[in-house]
Length: 370
Ligand code: GDP
Ligand code: ZN
Image (cartoon, rainbow, N blue to C red; front, side, top):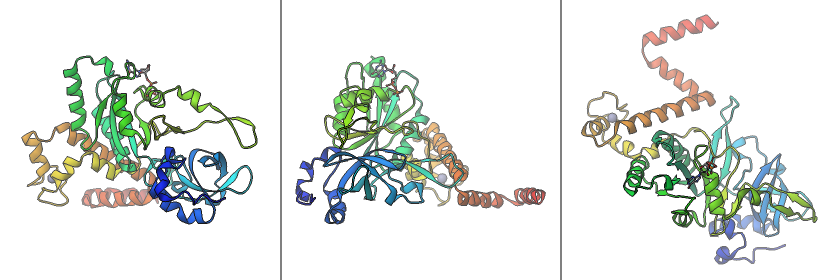
């Protein structure tokens, strides 16, 4: 079978374009196309096999040949893969394309490993309910996770019908905007349909995920974006290659307006995993201020010439922002230390540096252990 006749210029007309296939993927895939392999996107993974949408429809494929030791490298929902068109059911995944973005969470195991939850996500839609008091710290945590993945975050304030006063609503939007530099903030009411068009236009064409606390309105948003009941779609009875009817649960769903939504178990309420870069991006104004500190390693505690503390004094930087920044940095450090032996060792060295007293205490402890 030869699919290379579909030239790069026709990438947008490609049947997989709806799933995010574009000219860059086509270029990446070229060497595999030469081998006669078939491009496809993983819509679901379970027990060493996956469902892949291809030009032949959705096929079942074994990932046996691409299973590495590193759990960060296992095939996951959203990956673009090269499927061997030959062979029966299941077929075989021969390779997967380098990921543009990836959502990772820490595993419960004690090893320094993350678990990959979704790949090649363009938009991280963070749902925040207006039915509850705004928890900006929580928004910032989701933002850190989103930035860290490489996806562009969008904050969607849901249930806007519960805040009928436009002035009150605009203040809430402003509060979130100051906590989310570089991030669009939308208001949506799934009940009335308000603001959905703006969201659809923003995420259209790309790959999106929904993040947010339970009850934030994610399922309702997903239904609205999909234009039908998600459960109906997910349980759609597919006819597989052999004419059997199988009930499939897809974790990657095509949106009627273009683009796809990834909704994998565990992704919605995921915690931070080594998200220092992401945390930095959430608090980009603090990082910019820090560039103006006299000392490069300024801790912004009591150092002379600290630009961050000066901005606090002048009221330019809200105290809450700095506290939230510190909290997330500490939380991240703790997670890294918990999961990564090397980071843990470094932290220990840090503690040791904290003076003779601490050092003596540690020595005493160590002697006690032996
Ligand atoms: P999830 O847990 O994040 O998936 O949240 P759901 O989508 O299940 O929504 C939680 C609750 O909020 C449900 O009772 C919804 O009916 C309600 N809800 C969702 N969107 C809206 C909205 O736009 N307006 C109002 N008033 N309620 C909503
Ligand atoms: Zn400083």
